[in-house]
Image (tube, rainbow over all chains, first blue to last red; front, side):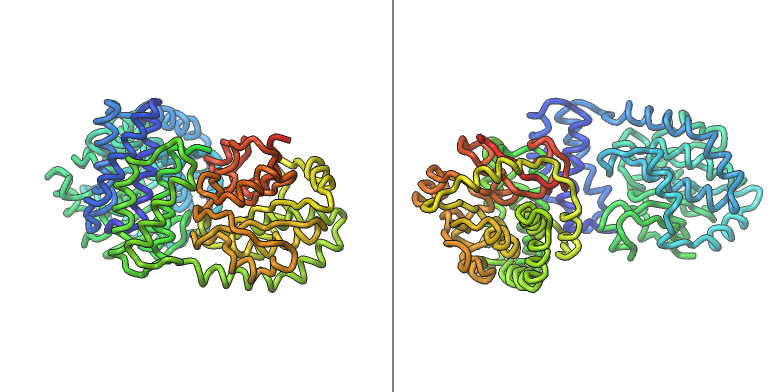
Length: 284
Length: 284
């Protein structure tokens, strides 16, 4: 997905939000906004939003010296999600359709995104997402692809945010198939990295592998060879969240996108509404 | 009120919104955003938001050649409001407290602001605003000041948006006192100018006078001498909307602000929540 005009003010909002988490110094935050403002003219609009947004996070690092502003927030968020894990597991067990319930939970987890939302009440978000109607629900295809995975094959599950990973773990457990769980290489906003996935207990249910990218989305030309090989050879790819959708929506392999639609640009691109939840298959 | 960091991304949003109304040419809109982005570093943060936002509207004029992008929207908006006028007048008559009901309507009219909101359903906005609880309601003071206005004195009523003026007219009629209705000098977003006030029928109930400013808010050092004289000599000033509040909130004369709070910056400044409605007196 390319960068749209509406993404430009949003970049400035992201800069302000992350800047405030990285430092309390208003002058430094102003400097971040000044420099991001000046860079708008150089943004290649044909690039994906995660690619074009990276310059913001570089500026924040450069100006504040803080290389991982979301570290504490990610840890807290994962801790909170883990405290909900036993109750959520029970709900999945007792659901009419446990797999669909687990998919819903995985999308509810995607709502926990400090990179996009200002503030999030995790429990309320989960409740609301569980009640929502899917705007797109390619569930039959999802089941078909999952069931087709043989003993020696693995599902490629591309994670998005820390905290959300605990919900991914519940879906992974429910699918009852071998899974490779993909994380980002280095800290970028609140995206899940190796340490976050370990804290979420993903290592108990999947093999954790870095895609090699440190962008807030999976942009293949920034990923390592190992990941690209897995990506092109996988029979069943699950991609979580908006950043991964923005990076992968033009790829030519079958992908199942699970996400909450967090902005009007993406909503228009998919043909749904802001805040809708989606299980969307492409190239199937 | 000074410019806050949160205003900076908002300026880019305003540029995009107004740019899209001024032209359909995406390249020109991109150029507007580029230039507004570059100007962020030069914004004097001690100035009020209407002062700092004016460079956006100058850029839009310069790049698109469109000096009055909101002209048609303002006319439509006023037409729509006029079509509701007879019903609203009846509601005021039948209300338990007609003056308070007319104040509420005047604030509901303030919700019709294409400069801030993306899209507005006028009737729904009115319904919602009429049901809202006031976050601040200096109503007794308002009545006291209104009743103190003598035969040879006039209320100074500073208008905000076109369309909203029809609702102002209802409040003016309900106050049953002589009124001077203040408009902007030249077109700026959807703010009310002389022609809009005439279309709304304000000339039937008040004397229409331009403050001389062409900013989207009343900034005294950009106003003409006639207005400044009236402003400092008025016993009872009503100021509508956010732009006027931002410009006048530090003045030392008694002012009654009637508005819907449309952003978090203003909400924090007043000590209320976004979307709250307010009748706030200062220096009384």
